[in-house]
Image (cartoon, each protein chain N blue to C red):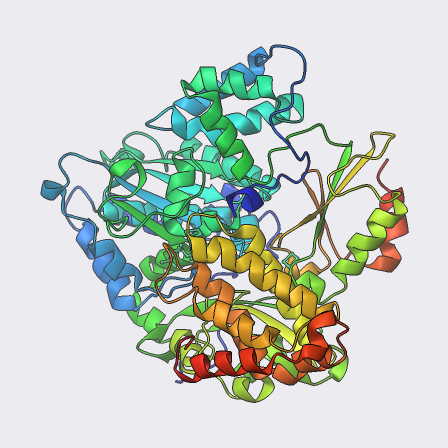
Length: 177
Length: 457
Ligand SMILES: Cc1cc2nc3c(=O)[nH]c(=O)nc-3n(C[C@H](O)[C@H](O)[C@H](O)COP(=O)(O)O)c2cc1C
Ligand code: SF4
Ligand code: FES
């Protein structure tokens, strides 16, 4: 479903407010200006601009949507529609470590579902996408990460981790400070 | 010489070479020779776009992204300059690689990004492209960084930009990151996504070659396809054709082997090698166990039984003859201990999650299939569930939807239930569903009649 394809890894509902108007820092603004030179339309810079927003603020708030919409001369509703289609734009703040456990078929065949369940158990059973009270971890289930030869595959923030079997989980979580 | 004898790696030749991703080592190893050759001969007319296209056509190269469409032929669908009304042509390299079980394009981009870029450059020359984009899936953050570095060094050396190597031709390449959506690998969804929209596949026609990104003629090619183009220009179409099973299945091919094998990984072999050769390359089945099923082309491909894969030629036509598909050459091995209903449920969940939602049969059908399968493996299945599942699946595919995602979604369900029905029935036999005792034979029979009438064939 559109809603399903758009199920953000984190954050369940609407565009949450971060409580203040936002604008890019000057280095990010420069990156944004460079982006615009790479496409024949402003709209095409939307996905990369949202990436810049997420790099800058960690997640896509209502204010980030409004700001990016203004920059690209799009309506906030359109931008929000795009944000919600893709799973990687965080629609709420996430923990310091966003743990993304692949449970697709090759990882599944190598015990990924148990790894995911165990991971959540060890972190006190947060709901999918919920952050632990200490703000350290957010755990989500994701689809194939194109690391199937190193199953079970896990991504933490932008980094790939391989062969995270159930028995390695304790050491693995311990390594995330 | 048989086209199936073992080959020296071609696409992965530089795997393991220290610093293989840098432009310096690429040049040391003879990289960009074809790009220099083609551009160098472009002014004199020794090298023309048509000549490059003809070589690719003559090689028999078929697209490595999934459908196996002849690459050179696709390129000829782009209207000639005088019929384009001044519109530019765009080349999009499809690096969305999200089909479960597929991890070959990642390896190509990680170990040899300049090989990919050179393929894009040569294709751009053939297609009169001035700006090419590489659409990489959002999760491959570090690969995208590496590609951006490679692009920057290619500009610095004058292989990209204005008046490339004094040829008078301009070419830009931009790396564009997706943001997490399997469907964006479908070429028209990729186009929408690149335009800055939700990744909704477009109704075809018009085909992208006529009207693609920004309403301009567009060619979408897979990463591995474009790498092959570079080698065809390096070594010629005859060499390419000397590798492979027959005229229709030519060249070196990357196979992604995962699941229950001793050495999962990417293996390069002539396209069309028998199944056993690949399995041996991957170290055989884990723990010396027996095979129960093999998915030959990613989660979208129909499962094959151990018997069906015996001696199977691993190429587009070979796997199609077994009523499955080579797809992205993602081979997922399931040994005798595998719980097939659970595996099928897992795959159904993937498709339910990834449907883009435009077409009712797909948007509604994929979650229903997943829900029913979950019910079966959770011990709450009804006797009628299997036939109902087959019936639902039968109403989703075969042109009922905008794109072939729906066909992909039903293939694992149909093949799983048809070929391993007793495993599903065993779950249902132990079911404690309250309706179970009703044994709705009437409904079962009606469904069976419809099935016999070919309604879901
Ligand atoms: C649901 C779906 C997902 C796809 N995903 C990919 C993908 O991740 N990578 C890819 O190269 N092709 C993918 N394709 C195939 C593309 O639509 C297109 O055929 C291909 O990129 C063309 O390149 P080729 O001719 O070089 O194979 C997908 C197709 C469908 C229907
Ligand atoms: S078949 Fe499914 S994925 Fe394809 S366009 Fe229709 S709803 Fe979207
Ligand atoms: S199935 Fe987990 S990385 Fe591919």
